[in-house]
Image (spheres, rainbow, N blue to C red):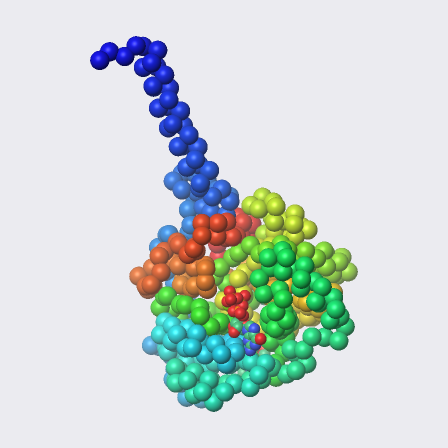
Length: 399
Ligand SMILES: Nc1nc2c(ncn2[C@@H]2O[C@H](COP(=O)(O)OP(=O)(O)OP(=O)(O)O)[C@@H](O)[C@H]2O)c(=O)[nH]1
Ligand SMILES: *[C@@H]1O[C@H](CO)[C@@H](O)[C@H](O)[C@H]1NC(C)=O
Ligand SMILES: *[C@@H]1O[C@H](CO)[C@@H](O)[C@H](O)[C@H]1NC(C)=O
Ligand SMILES: [Mg+2]
């Protein structure tokens, strides 16, 4: 059957229109921020996630268990002044055990660094027995002193209650849980003051439920010391601006009073980036909200014990935002490092495969199993835009 020319034209036009609409919809469905470009498209100067490139060990001399004495009980071992560190509740024992098993299997069974567990309540005998059974290394069980955990006397309980309700209305997770605020404050400015850590310099923070995917065959603490690193991270994220509206304004006040504390090679570009998520930077009053996700961190406590960081923490503590807002230790550590530390002293441990739900750091390496290289999140697609690495790589680098 012959079809009249105008009808044929109309048909062709409709097909084109449908194709155009499909193209537009696909475009709208790909997240525009926080992710890396695909193909040749550049996003923030990054062509693709560097975790897709083959990842090996860091360069330079590495200390290995085969060539050195890392025996658990050796008095003259090659271990340095360092500990695995975990603040944890007795009730989280079942979630901690698989995590310990992961880290022992991938790393610590070779190096036998001690574990130090902290709790605001005494650890149970069961907790001690079952954790010690997971490692040949020494385990220490420490109580957090009351004066490091209690809400400071200058904080007003009525204001806490009122603010908690406001934060809850804004959907800020855990904002009405006082112990969560106490935990964030302890991790921000207290952990490294614990008497049990007085003779310890480096720590690797471990939380229950996190996973490790890659065999790491060198002494990471030695790596930190030998390469003059202060802080190592795996995941770099955006925060909820509503949890920290006055953190940056308070920080600016502190900086104005101590302009000389700012490092020459600071990370202000990353801290104040307003290109990747301008809405976040605006809502947080000038702070990008980007931070090292601190449930993983390998750090040098001398930094946190320094005058600069100590005065900064005290300023924040007096301002009250650990309780009246929900300041996390991640943004506080990150801003401290970003302002006072030399950017070359922060290291991205791209080779340590890691997961804290819902995000991953998963490198492309034969040393890894159980995660997908380059996969950043598991869950809803909106999580993709929480990735702040494109900004970090742009302003600071991929070291
Ligand atoms: N002893 C003790 N440990 C705590 C307390 N609150 C939190 N922690 C620990 O502090 C760390 C962080 O707490 P989480 O509840 O995991 O906080 P989060 O990572 O922001 O939240 P999730 O996404 O639920 O994991 C974990 O190691 C907890 O075990 C507390 O009141 N007492
Ligand atoms: C261990 O580290 C602490 C804190 O940095 C330091 O005071 C102490 O001298 C160090 N001990 C050794 C044996 O290096
Ligand atoms: C380590 O850092 C210190 C202090 O910034 C510096 O003086 C020293 O030269 C650095 N050493 C190396 C090996 O980079
Ligand atoms: Mg957690």
